[in-house]
Length: 128
Image 1 (cartoon, one colour):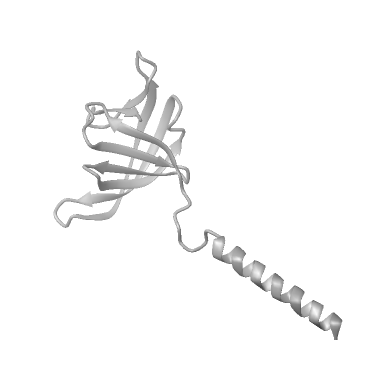
Image 2 (image 1 turned 90 degrees about the horizontal axis):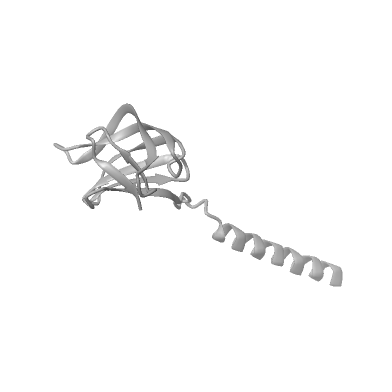
């Protein structure tokens, strides 16, 4: 009988340990990506590119998400970064709609050694 009680106690401890492990895991739909780099428009306008560790990016204007997609390259070093836009803000509906546009930015350093790039509209963005 003592062996059965010890087995029951061990099994209970194992079940409780597994329950705590499952409760602490990040598989509950939480956002596990982290910010790799943020680039703000040169004139400190509220235009912001945010690059995430999972290879996705977001572009915000006045804190409103206006574009998002995937990127390849390293946004924290000099060189090309290819942007693959998947969603774009439809100004009529005010919602993100599917879109497919590829474009390239080139991360460079200015005379002060700051990382920066220009977008299609010749706006200059600097690493925050």
